Structure formats: C-alpha cells, structure tokens
Image (cartoon, rainbow, N blue to C red; front, side, top):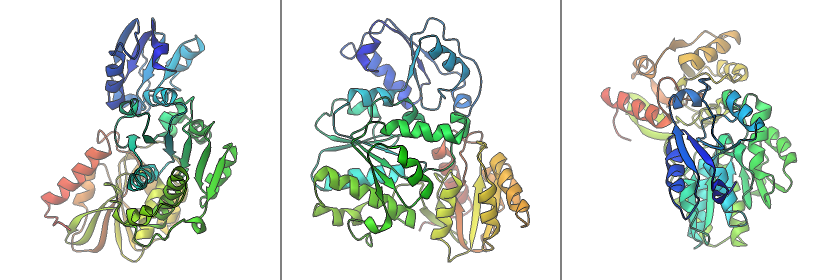
Length: 420
C-alpha cells in the first residue's frame, strides 16, 4: 500500500510508539496523502505487544496502520481483513514507496542489527551515500526522500509479516524460535520472515545454520554464505564470537555486490566498526567479575553464543524474563552440561528454564522474581563473568530492553561496579 492509497480513507493508527508517531506525521502532510479521517488508539499498548486480547472496536475504519508490536493475527484484525479492511505497518508502506530503489533488507532472529549497521559502515567507507533505518538508526519513514542513497533497513519479524514489496538485496542472519506469542507458531514465524524476500534480486543467507539453509530453499534467489566464503580476513574485527564473524561475512557479501567488487576501504572499515551496545558489551568490574550486558540475547541460542565467548571462564548467568511460550528443553539441557556456569533464573521464563535444567538431571538453580533480586544474589567475591544474557524479553518487569539494561547498570553501580 502506498501513502496516496490512503486518500479518502478512514485510517486508524494503532499504537503511538516511534512508528505510530511517525505515521501521524505523514498522515498530516497533504503532499503525501489526504485521508478522510485519522484516529488513534494506544490504550494497553504494552499488553498488546505481549499478546494481550483486549478487543478494539474497528467499526468505521478502512485502513489500520499498526505498530509492530500489535499482532496481525489478533481476532479483531483477522475479522477486519475478512470484511475487506486493510491492515499494514509503516515499514511495509515505506518499502512499497521505495519499490525499485536502492534498499537492503536485513532480518533474522538475531544478528540483524550488527549485520545491518556493519553493511552501512562498509558502504559508507566505500564512499556510497547510505542511510541506516528501521529497528536501528532512523525511523524508516525518514528515508522516503533519499532516493539516491542506499538504504539499509533492519526489519523485525513483525515488520516482515506486513511486507508486500521486497528490498532489492536481502540478508537473512539466523532463525530460532522467537515471538511465538505474536505469530502463533514457529511455522508462521518463518513464513512471516520470508515475506520480506518474496521478490528480492538476491538474498544472502547464513549457510552455517542448517535450519536456516533449509528454510532458505523457499527464497527464489538466494546465495548461501559459509564460513569459508569470507571475502576478507576478519582478524581485526572487534566483534566477539563466531556468530559475529558470520554476520560480518554476510555484510561483506552484500556490500561487495553493491559496490561491484571488494573495495579497498573494506579491510580498514572492518577494524573501525564499533560493536553495538547491549550485545556482549562490557560495563565494568564488580568485585572479581567482569560485568557484561548482553540484554538483547532474548533467544536461547543467542545465550549459548555468549557462553561460547566466555567458555574459558566461570560465568554467573542471569537468565529469564517474560514467557513467550518458546521451547526451553534444549536450552535447559545445554546449561545443565556446563558446570562452570552458575544460573540465576528470573521471572516466568526463568522458572521454565530452571525446570528444564532440573529435568535434565542437574540441581535446580536459584529462581527469583525480579532483576534486582537476581543482582542481590550475585557473589562479588567470585571470579569470572557476570553475564546478563536473558534468553527472554523484558515485558512485565520493564518497558523494553533499554530499560532493563539501564536498570542492570544502575544496580551494579549502586553496589560499587568500577569502570572497565
């Protein structure tokens, strides 16, 4: 759907987060569109994002522009579409407006922010005009008037699900169970991710994850990238972990295709790329422990990647949060096999992880309700790493991952954490 398709329509903007506010700004611009009316609803937005079922009255509405956290599979939206209504999101509309223009779409359960920002960094180093937008960087709507620039657009599964137009180039970083409360099933989660790439010219896929390589068979024009396919040495990369080397390789392949070759500036650019916050980010020292913020590791597989980075040290792992109904059996069993990892399990998801650790034959870890209780249980006389890598989202206790991260830092600073 294009913005001009909203002319004369009765529009409801559902959710007034960053995308919702940006949508209101566009709907108020007569140069973009002239809807008959624009209304908003934002009550219970956090509950909606967490899978709540508070019904919303859609009588007298032609088009719903929803925030990403509002599931398109909510009963009233499914019924609305069946009656001829249109449900879309702002990112999908931006992709439609940019059809045929220079766009890279990046998605994946984990790794998309690092891969997307590194792709933009490489293109910028090569002298190309580039905009980083979507879940990272500027809101997608702000790049509508950048037709000459390459736009690297990070898309969540929520945003992919609404896409009807594909970016020219795609990058697919990983696939794990995630957001099942929004999508309803893992199969639907995968299908929604694939919506982004239905007509892309080429999609670079992490071929080292067998499940993803198999899923990628459904992508029309795909290029599988293996560890041996790195276009340049990655020794100078400041990103930690094998998974991040794979992200870097994907970014290099996409940037090289756009530039037309391996640009001489790429090698130096790899060494100057700054790792993003909240991803294996060292905050300081608490007693004998290095404190690491990996709060965006909301999938169990991402937690295991973090533990591999610190495999040579004892780890106190803070895990848990909001329960999204994903399967923790394999995760619990894997944690039970790591005697150097002390688990402190938090909230509903943490209790489920603790159940699985116990079921695997290990002693049940300490369980607490909140992050402050978890930090209280940390012994600063221990050595190694204090790792907040939750394997679950923050809903219920915190508004978002940033609030959780800030609370973690503040709790440790109150207890005497020193700077790195």
